[in-house]
Structures are given as structure tokens and as C-alpha cells.
Amino acid sequence: MSSMSHVYVLISDGHEEVRQSAELLINAEPDLSVCALAASGPELIELAKRHRPKVIAGDLHLPDFDPAERIRELKKELPAAELVIFADERTERVVGQLFAAGAKSLIRTDEAPQFLVAAIRAAAQGKTFLTPTVSNILFARFLEKGARIDQPDRSKLTSREREIIELICDGKTNKAIGSGLEISTRTVETHRAAVMRKVGVSSTAHLVRYAIRNGLIEA
Amino acid sequence: MPLRIVLADDHRLVRAGVRALLEKIRLGEVIAEAGDGREALELVAAHQPDIVLLDIGMPNLNGLDAIDRIKKGSPETKVIILSMHANEEYVVRALRSGVSGYLIKDSAVDELERAIHSVAAGQTYLSKRISKPTIQAYLSNTNRIYAPLDELTPRQREVLQLIGEGKNTKEIADLLGVSIKTVEAHRLRLMRRLGIHDLPGLVRFAIRTGLVSAET
Image 1 (cartoon, each protein chain N blue to C red):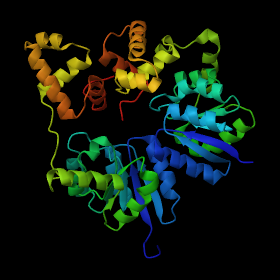
Image 2: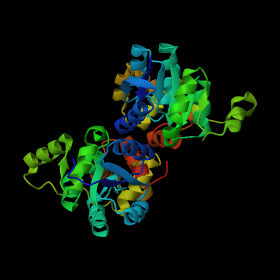
Image 3: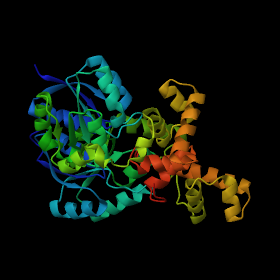
Image 4: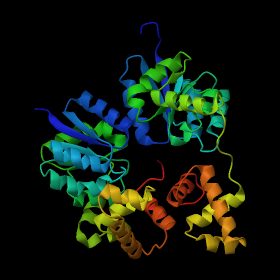
């Protein structure tokens, strides 16, 4: 497209291999170039201010809790940059919020070989790009709950809930947790179920994985 | 004739990147792509490629535990590990299993071409980022490294990986084509061997030792 000027892209992702692969793909396009690679949130800000990229692509180091809030912060701090987010199951759950916060595209990394380049070109022109996966999610939610797709589905964990997660991860039984906290086993069971619902996991093993991923415990 | 290459990595983005790189250096042709260790076994056995580029951290069956079985199913295929990690335990385990090359992903852009050349010529290629004296010391039996995962049989490691990924007993049984009872027996034995007696402990151990990642 000769009408489009050259687009500089900052790749900002926590995974080295994702950064490397995205760089190879983007640099293979004549109208796109990677200007810098950032491996962390602070690096993203620093490099974006130095290179002033048109598009920033990657997981953008979004936190599990309220990733949309982080997008709003980024848009405030770097108003000229358009954001293309590499999604996972966690960010997909809040896709509506992310778009509302100002993201231009949400792409699973396994779809990136197909769609990344198109999403970046669209973002560079200020346009939204929807992959089929994201369109399906949005449409399903739309059918489910009308237009309320930007509704948050998780709130912050309370300190009691975090405490219970830690004890579960230490391998403690409900009974042991109950006597440690001086509450009934039944109450522990209720807490446990509530915590799992809140963080969106369906088994103890996944709860442990969640806790490690989010720094609640060390492996 | 171009080299026939199978590419095994759980990230499609990585596979696309490596494929783009291979096309640029024109050394071979990617004839199939696998997204996990089990798929890699099947595709290598089916295609008998010259080279398989194998990631370590893959779901269902990790690259390190796939090497032996790949070599069994396709003895002529050369294995090049394409890893995130230069850690010695992995390198030593890979070399003991008979790999022909070991590359670190972030230097793959610079080294892949040379690695493929060397391996195709029957040599072993280790990334420049790996300390060769250290590896040699480890490979000689006088200086064995302590690797807790070595306490387990390959089958037990396989089961532990699947537990660490959050799969339940039924899912593991289906994946391995064995009964639930058999999986339970494996789990009991590996718990005894590791001295870990609860599920959260197993998941944490699998993540701590790098057998699985806490990321999805």
C-alpha cells in the first residue's frame, strides 16, 4: 500500500520467544519495522518514549487483575501509540473492557502468524481489528447478556481469601485449614469454592498454578 | 535435495518465526509442524525427517522426554533442541539422550544456519551461549549433577508433567491410553519417591524444576 507510510512497531512482551518470533514476522514486511523490544512494563514506557512507535504489540505485561485499567494508564501515558494485545484466556475474558479502554486489537499468539501484520496495519490507521476468535467471543457475550460486554467478571481477592489460597497451596486439608483459622471445615469449603470461582479455576492444581503465576506463593 | 525439517514448538508464533528464518537461510524445508511433544513423536515417525527442531517446554510431553522416543521411531533423524534455557541440567540430559544440537532461542537468529550445517554434516553443535567445559565436566561420570527429576522413571516424569499442567486423573489416563487405576499407581509411586504427599506439592515441584510452566 503506497499511501501508507512506514510503521514502526515496539514489541513489548514478557516472553522472549514471542518477542523474537514477532520481530521476525514484522520485519519480513516491507512497510513495517520493529524499532525496539521491551521485556517489562517499565521498559515498555521507557522505550516507547524514546522511539515513539506508531504501534505497540505484545502482552503489554498486563496484570491478571483489571488489565483494562492498565490499558487506560498506557493510553494516558502514551497517547500517540496504538495498542495491539497478545491475548490469553485471562485477557479474553475481559475483551470488551480492553477495547473500551482503548486497545485496537486482541490476538491470540497462535493466531498471530495469520493476523498480526493486518492488525498492526489497521492499528496504525487508528482502526480496530477483530480476529474471528474475538468476534465470536464478543458475539456470544452479546447474545448472552445484551450489550453489557464490558462488565468486569472478577474483583480483588480479600486478605482472608489470599490466606486460604496459601494454605491450600501448602497442601493443607480443609480440616487443617479450619482448625488453623479457628473456623469450621464447612466454612473453609465455602471459602475454597468462592475463591476458585473468583479466580476462574476449577481444580486445586489450577489454583496452585494461578497462585504461582500471580506471585501469591513461590513454586 | 533440501533438508526435510519437522518443527516442534507449542507456540505457533515461534514456529512461524523459525519458519520465516529457515526460508531466509534456504537450508531446508519445514514439512510438518507439531504443537506438543506427543504430536512431535507422531509426525517424526510418519515423516522420518532429516532434522527435528525440538522445543523443551511443551505441553503433554516435554521435548527432553520426547528425545528417546523420537530416536526410537526414526533413528536417522537428527534432533536439534531449540530452548529458552541454557541451564546445564537440560543440556546434559539432552546430550545424554543423543541430540545433535542445542540452540538457545534468543541466539537462534545468529546460530541456526551454522547449527543446521554442522548437524547435517554429522557433527554436534552447541550454542555459543553454553559453557562447554562445564558440560564436559558434567558429562564425565565423575561429576554427576544432582537432578531431582532423575529420581523418576520416564513414565513417572510424564505423569508428573501432566499433573503439573493441571490435568485430572481421567484426562491423564485418556491421554496415555491407560486406566485410571494405573495413573493412580504411578502418582502414588512418584509421590513416594519424591517424598511429596499432596497434590499442591506436586504441582509446585513440577513448576519449580521447570518440568512445566505456570503460564498457560
